[in-house]
Length: 456
Image (cartoon, rainbow, N blue to C red; front, top):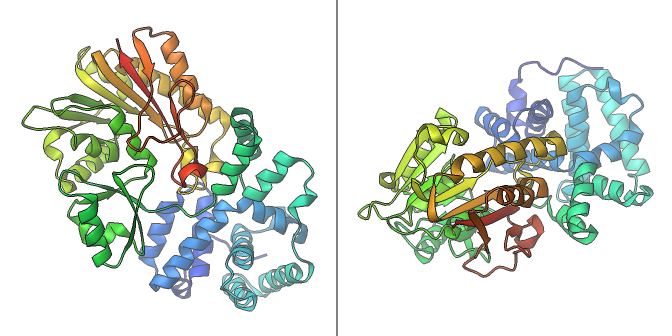
């Protein structure tokens, strides 16, 4: 039907956000990370800020709504197996714009799509794309009510895999599942943690507002500010280390440790260092407090150091390239007063930020991760002093990686006791055992799980 999709990007594409979005989506559909591909494409391109925003919106929009778009497009494609990847993505971005971007008129969407089809393909491709899009305009799109089974209908409507809908329904009930699914495709908020080592929320708010950003307080934690009106990582406040990008929910782990200025803390899976640097703000160098940050990859350990230096807390942080499951190779039993395990997980609490996860991960992947999570807990348990606190957390909303892991660990470790995970804002997010669950629909933040254990 068309020219090969792996051809070199043409000069005309570098100024065309729609053509570039097709390129990014081709790569993402083949397993590339959306954020990395998007960043790479923006650096190569010659786009205005407005068109960078349009490119970003289309890429994430198509990923978020892929099952929905596929459902709508299928009746108009006679032989989908013969459809070139780039042509499919071109139809998806066109359909996404028609359905979700009200400010762009249909004639402009069609003109752009037809132009791209002609320039990347040939006249046959142009005719095909023109025919499909005109047919959609004439006939309209299939209604979700035509899907009789309710879990299947919710899966297609919210573009979440059926197994995830079924799993959440079994865990949380139908109404909560619908609420999560309905909220998961909203744009993520830009959340920053104020570096209390150097400044205060009020001072940072004034600095950012003076620079033209809009700033709001967080209902999740007093450490967070919600910032809009620009990329805050480009602000002077960010460069000076007065703040760092971190989701509100993720900020709830460190306070649960109840760190003292002289505490010796282990952060068992630390990169890129958001929680490590947060822990460091509770420590006093003069009192001997320090945090050991572990990561299995050297390049990620370097990220921890870079963040620590930017935030001016490097004097309390020791970075080690080490698999947390092998912590006994380096540290004696009862070395640490506090241990944080921000465990590697499936990441289903991050679907707003990493929408492709929904198509890549399966329930079996979750059970495989469970083995790693248990192994890390087993490895670090003996390194905690009696009376010390261990805080376990994940950025997923699957029971298999959360309370199942903790209950299994407690069943074989009678020396540990589960205690309620407290929040400064007294959030109503604890289950009957005192474990914290923040779901994506609760505060429009990331989904997160935290359990707090004390060694007796």
